Length: 289
Image (cartoon, rainbow, N blue to C red; front, side, top):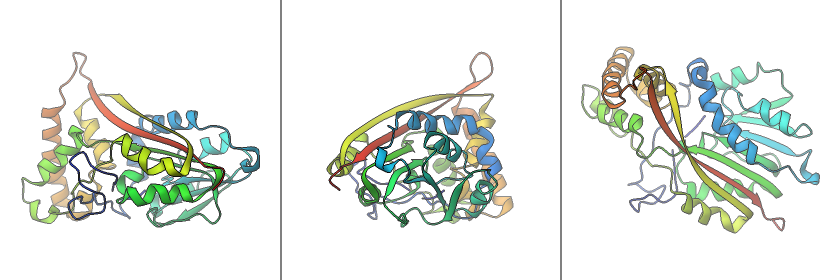
């Protein structure tokens, strides 16, 4: 799983420019067991996206279906079940994630590659990307390029966390600026947020016959604030883990834990609501190319 964001920002910044910055994604630090601890919550947006993907045209039914940023392959079997005649390709840049995916009893090809520069071996019938493109810069180039990797009539389906103002993420930056780790983390956590839906419409409309965009705010019910810390350790805290030694990272996590406990109050039953906003993009490439 790979990379930072793009599109035009609410403050007017352009993706890929110096002011836009980058949320650094560690290439080798992904931990499948930790990432999958909240698999039901992480997979639900993928299922919601897949439910809206139309059937492939008859001439593409046996074509290439790509799980782009497949991670440990937790969504790939659902793509296989939905498109039984297709040839499946799972692409990810994390060896640990791909090692887990290869344990699946699934007729699929697995490829280690950088999503930012990957191109399919042939025009794809479907490129399905669940919670990965938010790590990548230059969406104004990346999204049209992916649409151009589709066969005529092929489908691009994307889900990205849209967490510009998410408290769990802003707390990472707040804690990073206040502590003995500040110098080591300087410049590593600059955020280039996922753009608003209208930006992606403008990026993809020239290449697509049909285009559907929507947002959902999921209210994840957690047993307590510590679950939010564990969730973040599987994603947002990975750049911190990569930058600090074991002791420094442990100290950072405890400072972050204290901040999360202050920011996320418990409900009367002791549980905590963890709002998580996600953006969905679904387009079909024009039949004329």
